[in-house]
Length: 132
Ligand SMILES: [Zn+2]
Image (tube, rainbow, N blue to C red):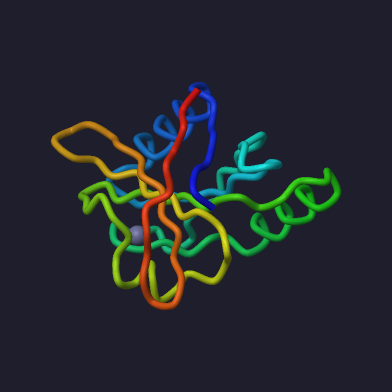
């Protein structure tokens, strides 16, 4: 995937969510069709940690079922880095289990910034986030 399209409202709702939960990390799922996000799921970080996240498995399963039954695909997984960095961490790379865009929302100098990454074979490359 080279790019992922997300609406301005969706983008702002993600930022509001991760900002609300900071300084703890928070996370969620993005679903849609043809690299265009249509639905965001906010999933509880049951690790309650400032440095890692573990998605609540029940909420994750429910989201996957909803995505399936609505004919969509899982397009992305987002989580926050309230204290940076702006890129995926070694842990993020090691734990990447899905062929989707991983979105990192990082707070740098008090402002949230989102970047997308494709993680594969122990490495990553940037995926353009188009906010429309
Ligand atoms: Zn991370």
